[in-house]
Figure 1 (tube, rainbow, N blue to C red):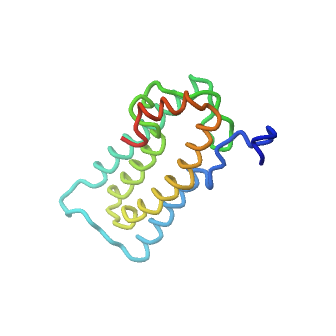
Figure 2 (tube, one colour):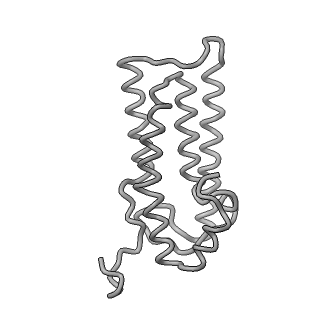
Figure 3 (cartoon, rainbow, N blue to C red):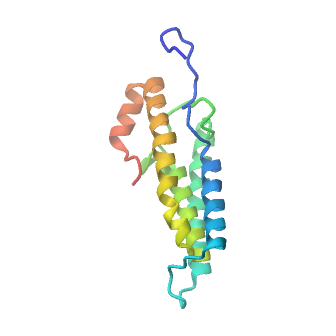
Length: 160
């Protein structure tokens, strides 16, 4: 829509909902692993336990980030308006802790089931999140919050 007339969508306009992209990556990886298993870990490695730890670390980061958003009174869903720039909690260290949590979750599942397919699928998942979601969020936040967002963007890295 046209921002000059005030008729613009008050959301990032993300190309895909991130949880859907994550679920599709996991499902595709599981299907590929079922059709043609590609293990990548040594047999003696406790893959289930290690993968579970990585997955839980990602889930913990995601929950911490979502809780921080809720406490700040802003929306998590990319289809909803953002009320404020959040720079507390994990947002002091990265502008995208929820997506980092998703990446860790995907890596954790890959390790737990010893599937190289899920590691390979990190690449398209990253590209979808980076260009179909984060790039659009950044444009939206800059348009909506201007200098406040630009100052935050200058202080805090996109990823780590």
